[in-house]
Each structure stands twice: as C-alpha cells, then as structure tokens.
Amino acid sequence: MDLAQACLIAGLNVTKNCQLLAIRKMQHSEKEEFNQSIHQDLVNVDEIIGLCDTRFMQTNTCTCREASERGTRILSAVAIYIEEYAINGVVVGVDCETMAQNGNVICELWRKIKICRITSTIGTDISFCFRDRLVILGDGIVTEPGKIGFFPGVQVSIAPLGETINGRIVVDGSISPGGIVLSPVKLSLEKGVITQIEDGSDANAWAN
Image (cartoon, rainbow, N blue to C red; front, side, top):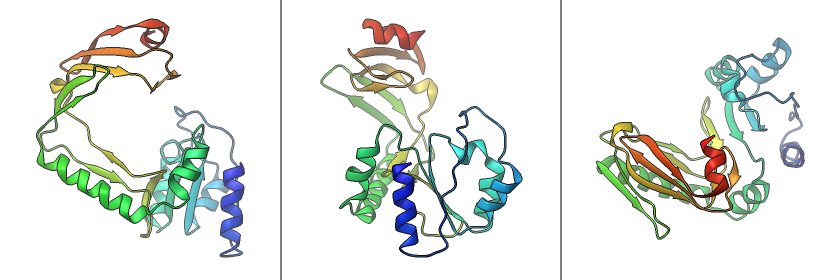
C-alpha cells in the first residue's frame, strides 16, 4: 500500500483525475472476473498501474483485454518482497531507455544462436536448443496506447525446446515455490525432464 499511495501522490501531482482502487486478494488460480463496477472503472481509464500480488492481467483477462483494446496502457508490478529493489534498483536513477536497448541486444543474440550452454562455478552445466523460438522483450515501458507491460526491469524471455534440455542446474539463491535456499539444490535433467533432485532439506521440500 505504501508503493500504491506513492504512485497516487505522483499521479495527483500531474492530474487531478487519478484514483487508487483497492481490490480483494485473489488467488493466482482464480478464474473469476471482476464485478461490473470494477470492470467499468478499469476499461474507461487511460493508464493502469497494478501493484498487487494478484496477477490481475491473467486472472481477469476479459477486463484487461477490453481495456487494452480501448487504448488503455497497463503496467503490472508484483513488488512483494522486492520493494527496496523495485524502488532503488529500478526507479531511482535508472536509464530505462538504455536498459531496453541492452535488452534488445540480448534478443538479437538469442535469435541468432541455436544452442545455448550455461555453466557456473558452483556446478551448473546445462545446454538446450532455441531453434527459432520467439524472443520477447518485457521492457517495462508502456508508452503506446493499448500496450501491456510488466515491471520492474527489463526481462528477455525465450522458451527452449523441452526435449533438448540436458545437464545440471545448481540453485544457491532462491527457488519457487520455497524461497531462499539454505543449501544449494541440484537438479539433473535429461530431455527436459528432471531426473534427480539432490542435497538437503530445501531439495527434499521442493521435490515434495
């Protein structure tokens, strides 16, 4: 709510026609649409900034689709647990246009290569094939009417061909579901299927 109120204040400094709408928490798996009152509020505005754990753009597809078709710019940000990063690492003193340009460079690299291999000093060694897969840049910039984007940061997304994924991934940061791991989790994969999960309580909990 602190982030939402800060955005509201920033908006009111630009225009009097800025509002803060609070909705109930909705599970990511919910299929229910917004009620008619909220639906009308959202499809009749110029810009929407979504700051909530609810992935409203996916849960309420009809509302967001209609709003986008009418020209509404929509930016979704799930800042839960990364509030400080969302402010200091992305908002304050960051050149978003340069970040987007760097993202486009990565997109071009991924479009040109066919096989990708990732290694790390802690044991990750995995390879996979892209083979003309679609590359998507989520630049977090929604300047055009009807554009939908995600925030924070610049995210370059591509999906490898499942049957080409082979090797080992070692996770020493965070894993979903679960969060930050106490000891590295080691995953072995063959043809896109996890064949073995090793090491510690985090690995056991994640496997179950």
